Amino acid sequence: MESLDEYILQHIEPEPDYLYRLWRATNIHMLHGRMASGHLQGRLLKMLVQMIQPKNILEVGTFSGYSALCMAEGLEEGGRLYTFEINDEQEDFTRPWIEGSPVADKIEFIIGDANVEAPKLGIVFDMAFIDGDKRTYQQTYETVLSLLRPGGFIIADNTLWDGHVIDPNYQKDQQTRGIETFNDFVKNDTRVEQVILPLRDGLTIIRKK
Image (cartoon, rainbow, N blue to C red; front, side, top):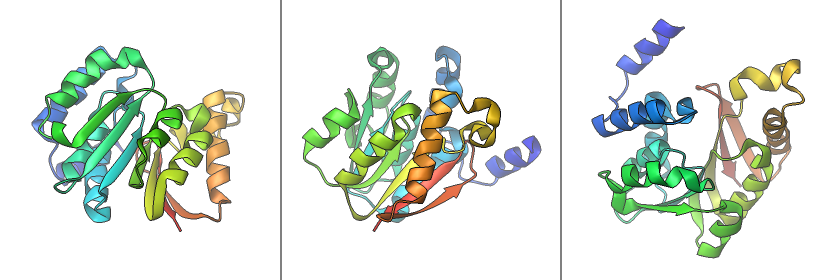
């Protein structure tokens, strides 16, 4: 599988140098560096933005800023991405990378709880990317869905959670349970239609009816 993964990366749009350097810095300096989206998922996020053509994107969980930069790449002129990071200790690493990027003018980086702060913006979003605290995924989903226009899209990351969602050894883990609860809820939510892609750690694409 590793060689197949390498083959895929060799046959898609190359990772921009700035993003490669951010990926390297994230893995060197951050405790959980693998949480960053990376080359394949990053190129997919950019393409999804180009396909959906949103004016406003909401991101919950900035981490090192990799996914935000990828989505901002795909935005058309005048498009805006609002990204929320609840962990204020993340700011010293992330803000310089965002503000020094070629797409800095398209991104507003906000430290705070998106469930509390995003509704205060008074913005109707066309697209959202959920990649925050897994224990509160369902709560975040409800917040985001209420801010999304009909026909808008939510992309939820980590929805297969390294396979733990089907591993009985992880049933007591709160993050695993948070993902399972979210997956079960979305599956039965008549307000949306959804598909799970087995890409990296699982990516669910949700369309609001």
